[in-house]
Length: 128
Image (tube, rainbow, N blue to C red; front, side, top):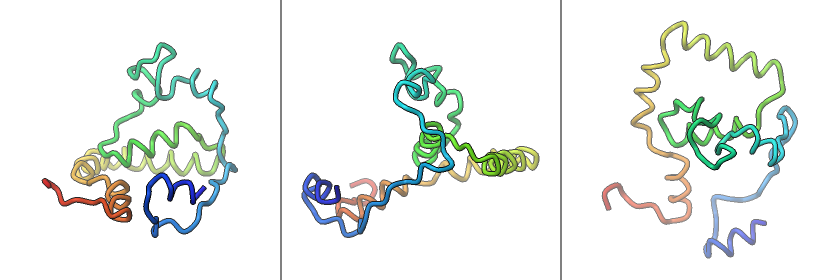
């Protein structure tokens, strides 16, 4: 697979040394039909409004949006992890730290994409 990626990118990928399968333990596996019927990204009629993602999306960064999509497509089934996430959200809401955090994150660039471009040698300075 790594050779295929190298061929399609037409360059070496020094930042990628190996590919590892993501563990499926601790997650509910959703097949394509289930994801479609849950209307995670698209409604059954093909729209993007009124989807599960649209209802929950209050992200302010591209990285946050991608992370939310990953969580919706691979929901966890570990009770302890679910409770830790709920506790973290409750703490932020109770201490009213949600809005200041959102404001601070608004200025964060898409670090994942920037690092990918740097590794591929295709990064450009802003405004060029």
